[in-house]
Image 1 (spheres, helix red, strand yellow):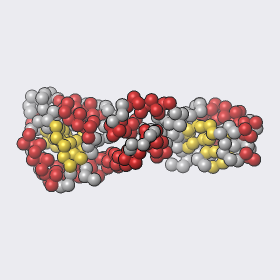
Image 2: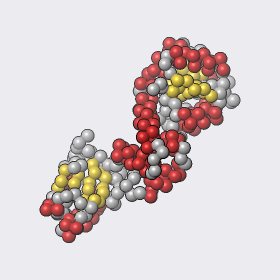
Image 3: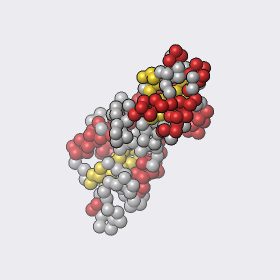
Image 4: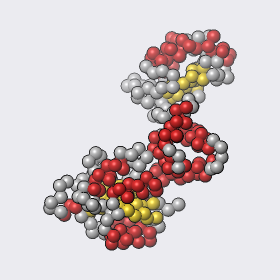
Length: 293
C-alpha cells in the first residue's frame, strides 16, 4: 500500500511540481489549495503525512490549520511539515518555529526546497511518525472488510479492537466512523451500552476478583472492598498511575481455592484481607513503580 501525502498549498506550480516528485518516489499524493479544503481532505482521506504552506488566503492560515488538525483526536498523530517562504517576509507577524500549542508541526522547510531534501525528509517521517498511523489504518481497513455487510458488524469490529488494545481508543473510534460512514455518536452509543467495552486504557496489571458462588460465600466481597480501599478505585476502574485495573468476574474455575484473586493470569487462592497488601506489593517497587516494566 502506497503512503499518502497531502499537500495543502495555494501555489499551484509548487503543488504540481511537488506532486510529480513524490509520485515518482512511490507516494500517493493528494492536493488542497487552502486550509478549509485541506482539513476536509485530512478527515476524509487520513493521509500519512501533510505538507502545509503557511501563507495562503491569509498570513497565518497554515498555523491555524495545523492547530485544528492537532486538536482533532483522530488526526493529531499525522505528522505535519510546514513548507513556507514566510521567514523571508519582513512584515510577517509570527516567529516560525515548531511549537506544541502555537505551531504544532514536526519541521519547517523554507522555500525553495531542494528536491532531494524534501524526499529524504518525507521518507524519514513516513518511516517514523507516520508508520504507526498507517498500520492502524491498515488494520481497521481489514476489519471493516472482514465484517462488511454482516449483521452486528459494528459490535464485532469493536470487540476485535477491544481485544487488541484492551479498550477502544478515541482516535480509533474516529477512524472507524470514517471508514464505516457511521456517525461517531452511534459508535459511542454502542460502546457505552455494553459494559464489556472500555474507553480508557486498562492498567498494566489487571486484578480479577472472583464473585462466583463459592468465592462469594468464602468472603470475596470483603476481599474486593479491601482492594478498592487500598487502591482508591472501584470495580471497572484503573488507578491514576495506570498500574492496576480492577474487575469482577463470575468464575475463575478454581472453586476449591476460594476466595480467589487473579492478577495478570496468576492465581492467588484462599485469600484473606490481610494478604491483599502483600500480594499487591509484588507488583510495585519501593518507589511505587511497576516492578515488571
